Image 1 (cartoon, rainbow, N blue to C red):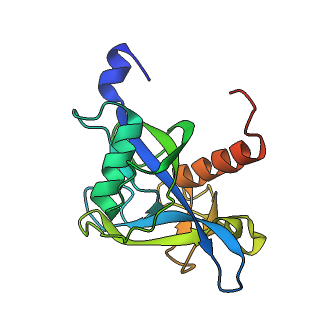
Image 2 (image 1 turned 90 degrees about the vertical axis):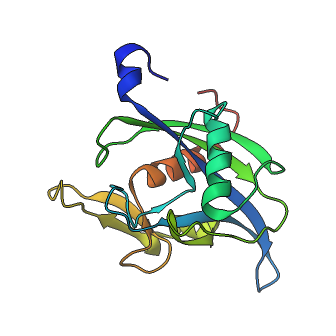
Length: 189
């Protein structure tokens, strides 16, 4: 984390990458990851985007990991206190849309028990589990352009409806980190 004057200007946030294993209709098993669609809000530069549950660190949070757990409980009603903690995937800086610099910490969890989702409609429009293996399906690859940088395109993955349910930006970058970690779990960083 930053120090001095930059620390006062930087916003710290954390997200939870929540995984679960489910039996598919064909009898096989597969891992799923939880995505949320952020609620539409005028004060939110990421309004309507696909993301992982999470948010800003607050005074009562003892760590970014605890903030990710708290935000997941608040946003989608999942209690991660009994989930297996898989690890800290890293910290990434936000690139655009934020009024202040933002550093986001990602933490991965394995949820062994079924819990119903209970959405906070002020924060989350929808939430769903998506097959992890499908994130590597080339047919789901696309690009995304934002109004502020029309000459740039960003890699994205379709996780639902093509026009609105795609992962890009920080969420996409955290997925890259996760897949890299899964392929090289013992590599020191």
